[in-house]
Length: 466
Image (cartoon, rainbow, N blue to C red; front, side):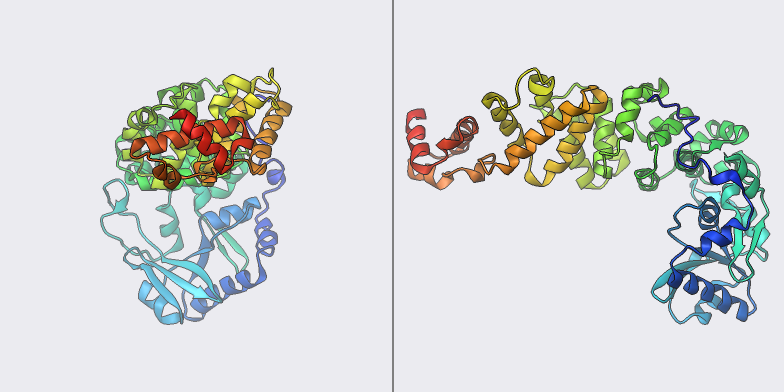
């Protein structure tokens, strides 16, 4: 199936048959009952103390779209200290910016005081927070119209000061107010716009999109960790390659994936193999997602003997991206997995997988993959065969089946599964590096003939090798 990332409309098709605001009432009643009751209590308590309170932002948008809602956030004209005085359990997590976490029935809600537009510094944060008086003031300083909707649970009333409802109908991402002003305030907003477009299968409004290149200097100030958070949120979207494609189209891709020129070329040319590979459901974790991106950039030029060269090549990316160490290490291990050696030798399925030499090769490759990493290597490798190498699905499944048969066979694959160990070699008079080297030789012999894995036989082999 060919992908046109500008027109893919599978995920949200049918949602906009009607955009009657009453749809939010139907969807909010689908929330877990205890969560809804707790949210109503937040609003009621604020109103009983003569304050306003509304659900606002992404949760209102997602309730209108019928999407899963993860957090219910409130905005209010109550000041942070007033919020703290009203509720029994609060956490002043962002009190400097007007945000207090309110805990009711073990559910946590962000309650943020109305804010006014203000000058921003470092491309991310306002120099000083000024509290507002009205909901409209608060909405007008937000990023996109679809995130500027507010809803009163108790009054069952939807408020739209920015045209967000109309943009939801049109499936459009549009800034509230002047796009250059919004993007110049906060360099993460263009990245978020690309994520929203990919996640919701929306188009970015032309004026909004054309403002992005004019604000590149502000986007450059975005901390790597903040981009990482945005990227991570795209792992589960139906067409995750669209986020990378939007970044590329907007001129942002190489700001965050420095040196990944091969991948950007493939994204711009809408290379079907690359898009299918990045989008495959077989890739389940961010580690595998990162490995897939590396594989697309490597373009099949794996160097199994010198993995340090690959790490050196992407050192600038690692340094900038500030990915968690486990993502970096495991991701690169998967990207240069020894399993890729299997494709050239038996991947074309011309040789029988039951051939003893092929089983030996499978064991040799698996021996270089730590047991804890195996499932990741096998998953990405099989996706690579299917989408990049266009290997028939039946053949991919046969190869995977053979790999798992080898793993279940209980035959020795790793050094610690040999019938002898380093102490046995020391007793035989071997020492230093040759102990490890000899064990590696013995392991390869056992890979070819599992029946050899018996202590006396291996010691005899050892004497002959010596």
